[in-house]
Image (cartoon, rainbow, N blue to C red):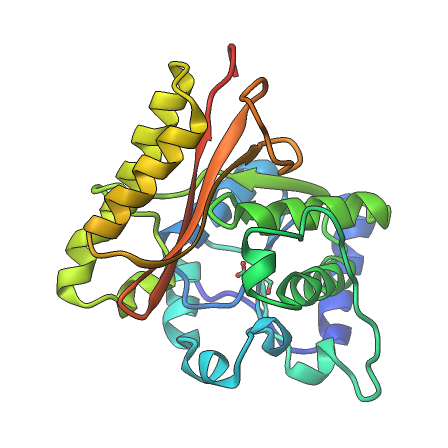
Length: 285
Ligand code: PAF
């Protein structure tokens, strides 16, 4: 079924005002397009949770660390629309740049703490840009619920912190990472891998999953993480930006695992930067 597409804030707000007057619960799934099974699982979840589902499609220029990355970011609006049609969503909001950043735009949101370390150390300004655009999309759509993938685990924390601190009336829902059958976390970047690297890429998830199991059985995290780095290096991965264990609740550094945790990694295979994270259980978590 054809889905309504709006490109202006005024058209969006005309529709959402009617929905809110009719007491409809609205979910939003913010995306930068190039939709894959990970995004579509968020859409499926959104449909099960609310009366109306909005997907946003906006390639946010400010969150890229260089113009080459921004230019090469995959754009496939027609394909994205086809994929969304099979989910029968209620609205696609695909704003022009000036609907998000009108002339004279001068405001930035900066979330400290959870945005520091991990990806924050390697992508200066990235999380400020993400927090700012997500705040705008949440306010513009006036959604009650917003869904994000756990694959970008630090991003999810930054958004949760920002929404709490700014009293934005929306519930943030984090959804499990969707994986290929060989466990590789689904990402639009996977398409950039050479055939040889695509075969090697699942070693990342497997190494993190094995490390999580070892830590859960009480092995010292330092030894386990060092072993994981060795395995990845000898499997052809290079430039390990980080491979760290952090608390699941707030990403603080954990000297010992006495609460649920995550092992998070960012690493290059060829020229492709892959990120992934897995849960480390504690007690019954
Ligand atoms: O995860 C993404 O695709 C983007 O960072 C988001 C949340 C849509 C903001 O541009």
